[in-house]
Image 1: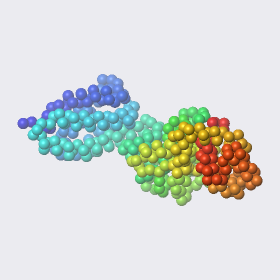
Image 2: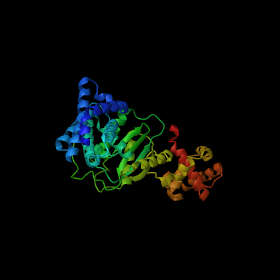
Image 3: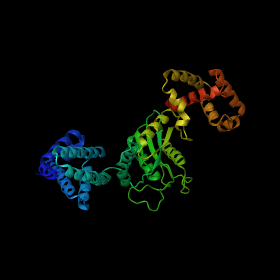
Length: 427
């Protein structure tokens, strides 16, 4: 009676050709690996080898050897150099695993219990080792082909999507992964943003200076992940390489000199580092921005990112970023965003305030100063009597006392909604 391993061996060539057909259907970019007869033959040869080697080693209950892993890594590297994206690479890994399990199931007969268990014991851990080697090679190949900004973007996307490939991508750009991150979403106003080449230049300068995952998600949104813990960028054990982030003296804006006040020293908290990075972005872009932040654990950042992004959409624009906004700061604004009737009411109040003499800026500063008149007047650089006049004018225009509990709840939200639209010239 034939063993399960013998039957699988006899079907290797047929199964490999069928796998190639499936890859062509399921992986859109697979065509880059079959541009000519030679590349098609190489792809088929690897598909056959992978199945034969799996059957041989599983039957002998031996792990993948160094030569096996090196071959897998080299194939991953070559495919990246041919232009196969990380997403398509991952699709190939999933398709291969699914097909192998199906092939094993189809070849299994009632008396194959022992052989089947031996295969399953081998397939799990060794499949993981082989996949890691293949992915590691792919990331290395991407490093030879893609820019630093593109690779850091891939790392940022992987972290935000809770993708296990993040560990390989982090190694490829000489960054450590951390247990937790502060996700900062920086929203730029609806106005012409820097062209793509300029955005690339700003992002590269930020990456080299800050050494954190960061990407320009679209022309109006920048996303950065700041490690929630001590800054370890000066760790002497950090591996050096061509992609090693520069030190703190590297200017964020490549056209601006380094800031002498930002020197190396005691590592600031994640919030301070995030605010400093936001200031760099605002300086590089040359305009106002709104910031939403949320803390989360690595491996569970998808929800964290969605929350930070929601906060950024209702957070007020700031010409010179002074603070980061969290869910606790804008929970009323988030609630209002789901109620069209409330939005219309607050929009009308905002329009009335916009007609007054600097009432929006006055109320924003007044509330930011915890309604301390003396402190607000100093911040606005006006006499306290001028501040009192403006507060009375706000009450006349809206019918709401700015210093009352009702006034704080309503006017602070109305002001933030006006400011979230950006400076007057961009609304």
